[in-house]
Image 1 (cartoon, rainbow, N blue to C red):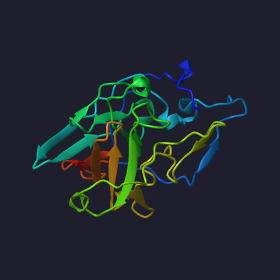
Image 2 (spheres, rainbow, N blue to C red):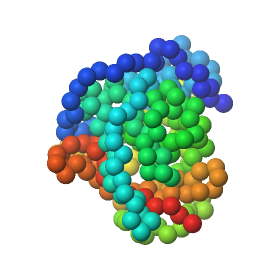
Image 3 (cartoon, rainbow, N blue to C red):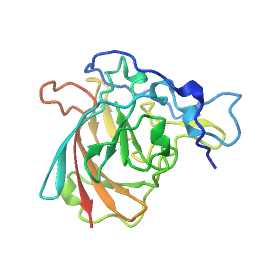
Image 4 (cartoon, one colour):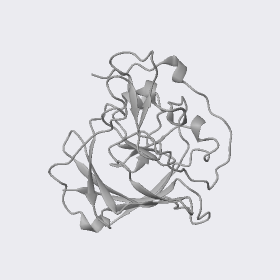
Length: 239
């Protein structure tokens, strides 16, 4: 059983910094020892690496989407000040039901049921398991387009799980905390760019509603095509 008590030492303040177009690279990390003094029965927030530690400020990243014929599409600004400043910037929290940003900081998000997904640079989270109390679950569906997914899968759902019971951090190969999204991108070692895998993510809420969510591009800023973490996305609610 994981505890949700947050340590005061995790509270950080914002730092100034402009966005840039640098992209994360894989660190080939899968587990990191959280320390010999780690308590038995782990608070997941205590094992987050410094780049993803909870920040006590609300993201100003824009959620700019429109809905046409039941499909919502647009951009999510999870640039978090660029790679140089992102460690001191919060996640962007999004409610996919209403297509809006949820104005909570990283600390408040751990007791909020209002948000569905959170994004910060190449780290994606869902509000369930180690990331929050929202009881969201996620299933990964191999699909090259949103139109291919017309019904929700009946199984295969999981939640975020980046902390073991003995306070070991679990990450995807790029170093991001393990989440239900899994290793959602391909990383090009030559260009240092990442590309979304041909997958659609179905988020299930505890009221039974489900939303199919697809990442179209990690570089969705038409004015700055190499600006990373400016997601172009689309989603729709499933019957």
